[in-house]
View 1 (cartoon, helix red, strand yellow):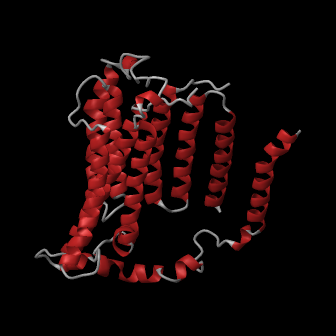
View 2 (cartoon, rainbow over the protein chains, first blue to last red):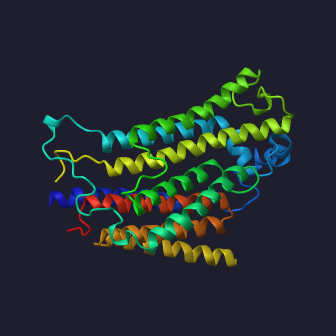
View 3 (cartoon, rainbow over the protein chains, first blue to last red):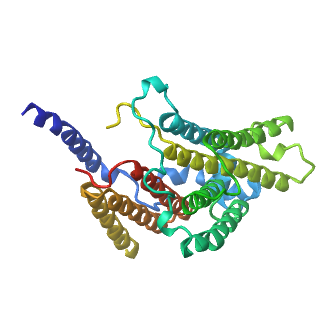
Length: 261
Length: 80
């Protein structure tokens, strides 16, 4: 009986919170309302000044990597730390004496991860047709992100997806780039470092941190802004790509601990 | 008005998919259904006028599904 009451407590809490949320639901502004608080303070300034200030026709890119570049830098750092945390939790090898169960290798059950489809049309189609298309699209998204949708995060995720496909379709063959977990964590840190380096370069040029107009290159103001946004996007791309590969490596190399059943 | 009806349909689909994911005993089926959750969310973002977020959601939804599938190799597919 006591256990039943204990199990009912979370349900009751969720019900109370949901009731409180739905009771004040009409308080929220409706979608697309021009009088909503989010649309009256700063968005007019962004719409009027974004193209002149940042030379970027895409407002989303202008806000994310130019007006709020400091915010995005720390977001990239958070993502790098998340990848590091996953590696530490899943793939760190504990002391052999403290570990009773040996780590189960991921090739134990099957010879290759993609064994049923190995040496079949699946591999050929994946490697020869789909992977180049995804890579070309990733580069397009990266370099076109200033003008249209997308940007560093999506490009990095697409490149990471290509690595995942490559590892899963042909695990036996050596791919062009091998990234064990130590190197991929370092690469994720390098992506964050490129972002920060852009900010330091603007400091060298005599501006505020991440003020792209003060980059120490001999360019016009608009070109400096484009270059700064591109450098930041490249940093984000490398960071996201390496984080995705890091998490993949961590899941592959997961050690089994004593408290595993 | 039409977009409201579309949003309502998509949100209903989200609730249905969530219930399936929670109560499915086959974990692989639950993971693939969760990929459908991400897909419907992508359409919801497009209806709400945020194609950037929809793009990110499409890419990340696929990658998280791959992570779940790889993790399933270490545990049993059926839950008790």
